[in-house]
Length: 267
Image 1 (cartoon, rainbow, N blue to C red):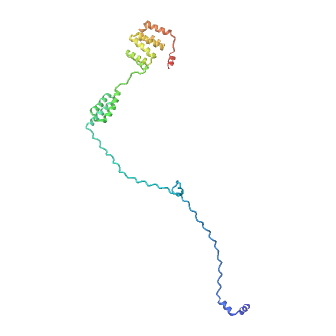
Image 2 (cartoon, rainbow, N blue to C red):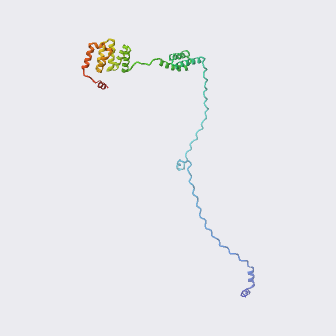
């Protein structure tokens, strides 16, 4: 009832104003404040690598001088290959020369050295134009000549000469034995074996004086030879002489010398 009274006491104009008054707008929501955006820092520039690795940069930013481009190589025309001349035609005598040459080689293989040498010499003489065969033929001719010529059997050392003289005496070649023993003494004057054998060789020839001289020298170098002097058949006639007996007696009375000590002293 009170509400009615309250409304009754107001004028009608107020009522109309309320009736005609527009509806109240809804209250606007308070705006939400957004945080201020953080300042964006500029991105750091990446360090650029030097253009040429391993080369230090030029001071002051100066650029390296560029080398001038090499001139293009001029093409040279290929050299023409020399023409190979065809081999000269075989001569009509070539077959005959080869046949004779092979005949000589066959004789050489069969160890008919003289026949082989003569055949190969014919190749050179009868076919002078076959120079290629001449060189090989001369080579085999020298081989044949070495086989034909006997090796040199001449004794060289005093020991070889004494041995060869002994063999010569056994075969009756006394003069050859004397020559060999004389040569041995020229090379080695104190060779008692050479002195002894030379005395025997001269005694065989009847040269008693020369024989006694070399035998005495042999006894001086080697007193042991006197036992051989008493038994040597070649000296049987010489042993009957007074000179030979006196020589042996003188050697027996002389003091004995050691041959080995004398040889070591010479060395």
